[in-house]
Image (cartoon, rainbow, N blue to C red; front, side):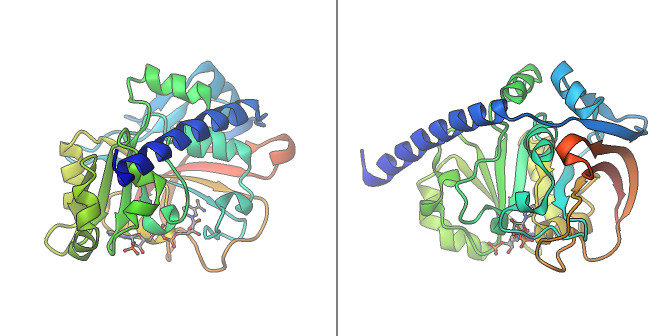
Length: 291
Ligand SMILES: NC(=O)c1ccc[n+]([C@@H]2O[C@H](COP(=O)([O-])OP(=O)(O)OC[C@H]3O[C@@H](n4cnc5c(N)ncnc54)[C@H](OP(=O)(O)O)[C@@H]3O)[C@@H](O)[C@H]2O)c1
C-alpha cells in the first residue's frame, strides 16, 4: 500500500469511529421539542417525517417541489438575534441542539441527494456532511437514499485535497464546483481520486449550468449549508427555492454577516418556537422569491 492509500484508509477508519461516536452522543442528547406557531404549506409541497420527528418538530416537515430541469435547492442557516451568520463554530450563535440535530443534521438533509458548502465553511474542519442520529439514519434508508449524501464543495481557487478528511474517503461521492484555476491547482490530487467529480464554473459555464449538470447526474435535491458568500451567489443565480432559518435569542456572531446583503422577499410556510431551555429560539421555513 503506498503512502497516500495508507493515509486514506486511516482517514476512513477515523471517519467510522467519529460517526459511531457521534451517533451515540446524539442519541443521548435530550432535544427540547418545537411548538408550532404557523403552518401554511402551499399546493405541491411535499412532507417528510417519522413519528419521532413529528413529535419533536410538532408536525410534518415540508419540502419545495422539484423544478423541472434543475435540482431543488434550499438554504439552511442559523443566525443570531441581530442577524449574523458568521462564526467559527455556528453553534455559538445560540440556535441550540434541536436546531443542530433535528433541523441542520436531520430534517433538511435526510432526503437530500447532496449537501453543498462553500470552501470557507469546509476549510480546516474534519467535516462530513451527513445524518448521524439513528432515527435519521433509519429514515434516510426508508426514503431509499444512500447512507451519505453527495458532498459538494464550491472553491474557485482549489482546496487542500491531500490534507482534509472529506476528500479522502473513497466511499463518499464528491463534486467540486471550481474554476479553471482551481482545476490547475488540484490537477494531481484529482487524478488520484476518481471518486471526486470536478465541475467547472466560469463565465461560459455558470452556476445554473453546473446545477443542470448535477441534475443530469441524478442529484435532485440539494441542501446548501452556507456560508453566506456562496448563499448570496446561489440566490442571485435564482437557484434557491426556500430557506430554513433558525434565529437564536442571543446577539453575537461576526458583525455584518447577514445571509444576504439586501432584504429577501420571503413567504413564511412554517414558524416554530423552541421550548424549555431553548425558549426564545425561532425556526422559520420560507419560500424565496428570486431577487
Ligand atoms: N450561521 C450559519 O448557519 C453558517 C453556515 C455556514 C457557515 N457559517 C460560517 O460562515 C463562515 C464562512 O462563510 P463565508 O460566507 O465566509 O464563506 P463560504 O460561503 O463558506 O465560502 C466562500 C468560498 O466559496 C467558494 N465559492 C463561492 N462562490 C463560488 C462559486 N460560484 N464557484 C466556486 N466557488 C465558489 C470560494 O472559495 P475559494 O476561496 O476556495 O475559491 C469562496 O471564497 C464561517 O465562519 C462559517 O463557520 C455559518
